[in-house]
Image (cartoon, rainbow, N blue to C red):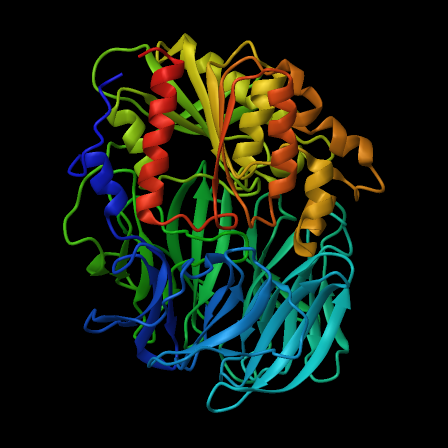
Length: 616
């Protein structure tokens, strides 16, 4: 391992300090207005007003913990940014609105009890807000009338359910309100349900039967056009559909020449084109589809990643009023940039926002290996200069139902700079590899994921990349859980582990988690804690704590309502009673919220841990 370089002018630290643009949304009715979440002018992600034409920005939020990536929205009239105001990142609070031109934030739902957010949407004319609020009583779907000043007016409770549902998509005139629901499947497979937003009457449901999932992207942007755009898995891969809920008329768009999923990302403001993304083996290709001619056009955009979604949250490229496309782009070697693409060719027209100086990273190589049961697993690999084998970091992403695409990841680059090979895998449970691949882990969490981690290790060793005695596990959130799980279930394979905001005890975590998360845990385990308690116990690292053999470093947040502090305190206490080598670092935030400087400090600590554990 190269000597650790902790002085502030090192390349790996400079990558961390490059500004990130992690979320962007333009206002369809105000072509010059957009909002971005970036840390360009602060240590945390803050909302900035962006002039799309000139590229000028102005910071409009100053939250201590930064803006919540999973609960921020920009109204289509371009007047207000809406976000969840919570307590130190605990993801429980009230929706607030912040004026685009600057000013004080105001509570949109001051009379409601505190809640988590699982959907924010707007009518095309900006007169109505859709909201999914989650409390102990369950999931609640509201339509809120918005005044010209953005203030909330009359509010209807349109629908409520104990079972999990997401999103709050409104039709252009606000008359219809759509969600994705688990009521048919009681799993992370969905049906789309559309309601009359005034009366609450159910207007229609789109469900493709057992084992299938239907997702919702948006309604048509045109007044009077009540069609829904989304994707369905009924063909075996995700494919777009158009559906009229009032008349139950449906058109499925099949593209037999395209491998993998074809995702519906958006609708042009004039209603004439769709923006689609082919996602195959964790790589992306954008297309436009003309609804009149049926012409599918492959866009010649730069390679890399354009998808910044987190479940139904986050951001994907969108059409601008002039027909061009606004997108956040990155690759392993290129940091995040907000770019404009030509809507006809896909060529990059300009960089709207990005770093003033570029500190390039090493490219990632897409790899494929085979698990013990013959299933092919995809991953990404970066290696340092020189000949292997190298000490290696095996990384597992969070989620679990997301996938790692080629991204500019300062943490991976820091490891490679210091002589490590870095490998991250899309284990079973990841999205984009088929419905069966994603759902195979349900009811038996940890089993198939560990099979894939073990297979990755074998491939790395057999390929001469990894030293068999110097492989560390690392991950955050669900990836942190898999780090703990791998260490206690196959202790013979790993030299150590670094687990960040992890789950160690599914039982206690279910008891302490926010109500919105209990629905997810129920889906993953195939039942609630009361129904299938033995599964929660069986899949918990704390159950096998005595097996831990390698040193472990844990990083955990005090205010986390996804991976609770109490369950980690109990896990660490048990390990200490058993005399295990464990260390824990606490930070005063929720499931995220680390600023740039904190991230650098933790990266240093992780590398020092690795240096000590591996005697490098």
